[in-house]
Image 1: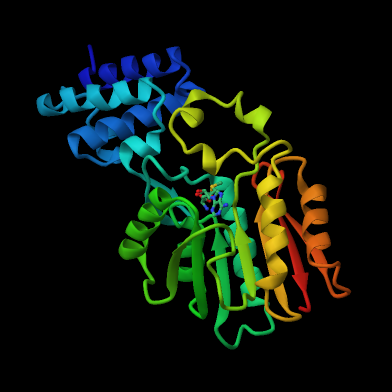
Image 2: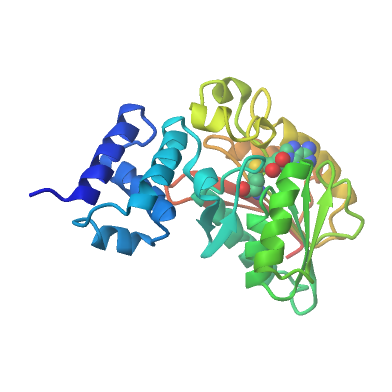
Length: 296
Ligand SMILES: C[S@@+](CC[C@H](N)C(=O)[O-])C[C@H]1O[C@@H](n2cnc3c(N)ncnc32)[C@H](O)[C@@H]1O
């Protein structure tokens, strides 16, 4: 006995594995189920429940078209036009980095820095530098009602995605999107500065899979010789933008960069006597976020 839809999806999953668009069969199956669901306008539970039925005739052609894009290594999030992050669904596409789960570490640590800030009984002024599709700024602003959020990116394409997400998810009255270089567009003193800027060293960038290099913006990933060039410039700009005496700076980094990043931040900030450094590990146990708190 055959299961027509299940057979179609199994063959599609095998094709994804053949071109190494998925790492293992579980991932390949999940991807084809989501692609078929998009083509047939069904959620994944209903795709699984319909496994023994024939595929919906009108869905076959659109499914093949979506599958071809994935076989050509276009990121799944771009094909579906969305990605879950911190419990919210963000719209994403060409021009904005696909949200990565490890960036949830930056959001969690940022929320704690806001909650524990001595000014937290008043409005805390927060910046998200390199906002991309807005995932950090909007997740933080939705979970911390007493913040004013400034979200900056140098890429107008990325800011368009951030704008779409802000209009859909809000809170639009407490988030300001700004175009420009790092902290330059900001005029208000900042209590908490968050940044997920490019940190992949250039020679490592050259070895990344096609899925990243051919589709995601280079300006969102390549961080120069040792990966920390942009963070050096960011750190130089910090003293002119952080509030007097009491503030926190949190940056997302790659594996093995924590001690260098800590040094860059502390040197630029003049090694304040009250500085306290923390590192936050992601779910893979990698030191993913370096935080410097001053005057807490
Ligand atoms: C690693 S991506 C992070 C995007 C988003 N925050 C996220 O976590 O998905 C880095 C972002 O920094 C932006 N960027 C790179 N250089 C910049 C600069 N000099 N000034 C402002 N933004 C910059 C890129 O356009 C990109 O959107």
